[in-house]
Amino acid sequence: MRAAALEFLESGQWPTRLPEDRAGRREGAVDSAWPLPTLDYLAPCPEPGTGARSGVAVRSAVRPYYDVLLQMAIADKRPNDALHWYDKMVASGKQSSGLGGWGVHSYSSFSDEVAEAVASTHPERALDIYRRGLDAHLEQANISAYERCAVYLGKMRPILTSLGRDKEWTHLLADVRQNYRNRPRFMEILDKLEGRTILRTHKSRSGR
Picture 1 (cartoon, rainbow, N blue to C red):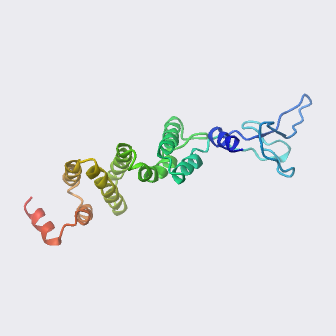
Picture 2 (picture 1 turned 135 degrees about the vertical axis):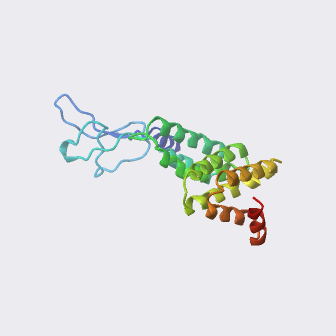
Picture 3 (picture 1 turned 90 degrees about the vertical axis):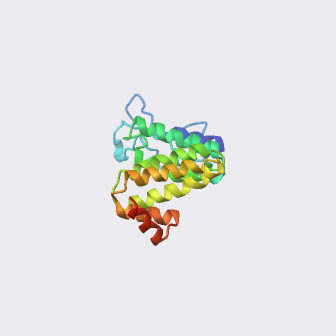
């Protein structure tokens, strides 16, 4: 039963179908390999592209449930599998953001969760995900984006420290400050991230 359920989540293929006989009639049928009982009052969905015959609504295009598989892997503390399904979502999103595909917003909503789940076992992958999130928010000039940038920088710092790469974080922060020094509210948020005092901040900016 587990194998059948996982196969459904990965393929998106429903075990029910509406085959058409020679007379053009459509009757519900269930895949013989499906291990669970079916309920008579639940009409099977038409296959994509068959139209809405007999008043039955057309189901959207077949789409794998990578999000469910991803969340299952995270809950079970299986970082390798979490990355596997996340990469599947990313690849699908790049191929198509329409029906049957995962758009950028779909998989990016899981990015932070994945990075946090794999930070201890796959630090480089976590850093890559956080860095892409940082770069995406650096393009936006608003308080919410500034705060998200600080969150990403804050999450990257302990990972780099664990890898003995503290200077890399210092250089990254310095580059961000230099490139976006014309955003005073952003600089204030970065000051808080570093734990700078008001006096120290004032002296630092006065010396520029």
